[in-house]
Amino acid sequence: MKTKDRILETARELFNARRFGNVTTAELAAECGIAEGNLWYHYKNKRALLEAIAGQFLLDVEERLALLPSDPERILHQYADMLFALMSEIRRYRFLYRDQADYGEHTDNLLKRLPGIYRDTQSQFQTFFHGMIKGNHLALDQAHIPALATNSVLILRYHLEFLRESGQDSDIGSGAVRAAVEQHLTLFQQSLSASARETLHNALESALETA
Image: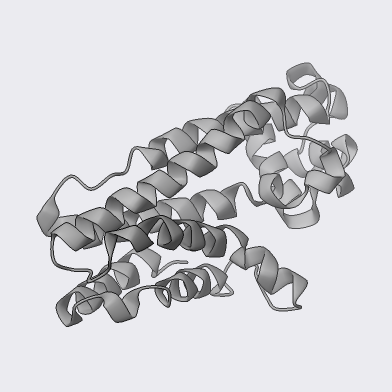
């Protein structure tokens, strides 16, 4: 891995673990095993690191938003894959979601795109739920879909921080991602057919086995 990429990856991991405001460039350089001047050569300050990480985040978001149902026979598996991608995104860029008080507003590009990300994510969930209804997997009035999509996004987006703020373990390996997914399922699993519940459960077990 190139030095520039290694700095970025290490910074993201440290910011996630210790919060953006608690990590100095000297500590980051030491963690990377390089001189602080070498770090400055690639990224002149922490704001430059933030902008680079936010840029990666936006690219990953677009890839995740592109995950839409394409095969009616596999929509439940595709939904599980989308959930895993979303939760991986939230976990990978956790400090961007969590530490706004430390670094103020998002970068300009992220601040501009953020409202659209939430709208597009809600639309992504609605598309899956409509597909589940059409495929006779989900018995739900179409009028309830917007609220279901919004509530699903809220639970998945904020569950890790709810666990953290309530004194529960939300770190990697804690099962927090699985707990978030299971919590969102309580919104609609009673409306799934028996076969759909089993298929989705198995698909999620496969997708989340390392989460």
